[in-house]
Length: 207
Image 1: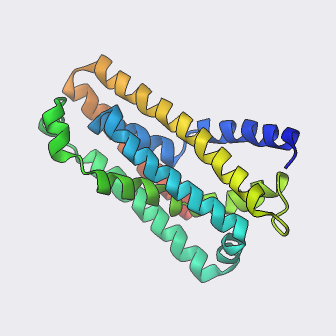
Image 2: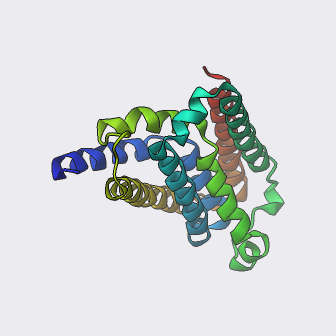
């Protein structure tokens, strides 16, 4: 991959990562609930899911899934239901359940669960498969892509996405610190929950 091509990829990755989507909303919701440091585990799960999605697209399996109506429909439905479920969980958070102490976070936060949730947010995003299949040929030839080129694409995406999601997590954590009032945090969670549900419906029901 030429350096100029890679610079174009970096620029595109930043634009794509900054654009609001399921991963950004999930990151912010986790940060408002469990704090910035705990959310880094969720972000790690997101990056693994992203890396797997890109690898599938590069390998040609993503194209196979997209062109096979049954598999495409199943993946699309799973992704939609998963985002809706996360949104519902967010909506059902009660005021008395919203703690701010380290002890509270340690009691309710489960690292393995958070990591798995992050992974599936990105990996079950069938729109992501479609996007990568359309987007990646702008920078690499999917028919002749080498292991090195594929590695560069995956690492570039993951590093930039990690930077952006970490920034989102920090912003959400700081906003929670500024708000202080548990009732305001509750409404913030409700807005994020509704947004996750809406994105899930749009992604699942759109053509």
